[in-house]
Length: 244
Image (cartoon, rainbow, N blue to C red; front, top):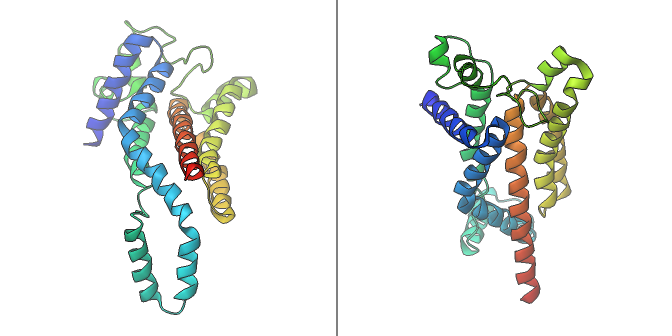
């Protein structure tokens, strides 16, 4: 099953590469298609997060009222969610659905060991480019004039090319961290939750440092599209409340 997902991703990237002649742009287009497919769920996700923040004062009242009766608190909280048609877990599904794509893309773009070159080329971009070197240009791994190799990690670029080579990759890592931090900061919420988001973003910088650049490109693009959608929805909700 996992190999089938990777093979499907590679096929999609190759199809988009045949149109763009650039795997970086192919990743951006793939990200756009995935975001469009998940849009009904991400709209519900933003709405659920918005509603959760809207009812927080009432939840705090319930917590204060039933602080000595855990079972009653659970019952009243669940009842309140049902009455207000709020799903406390509604914001999780789109992220859960994206994670298999994220980790599959991580493996598609990274080095792969084991099996013949032809077998590896079925679900691994570096192997695919190597096997098809006769029909693909030497610059196949490049993203426009920005990244020389989307299959390399920032760490690898620093080790092989030094500071000058790693600069665009380091910028991408910073954008990766911001893409995790910004959506949480723009959502209404408590300072404690936002502080947790800041810590998580800082921790994820290391993951970005050791991830293929194409994976970071996917996540940053996806996050930018998500933030745009989120802000359009939040402003729409604010206008409705103002009109109400």
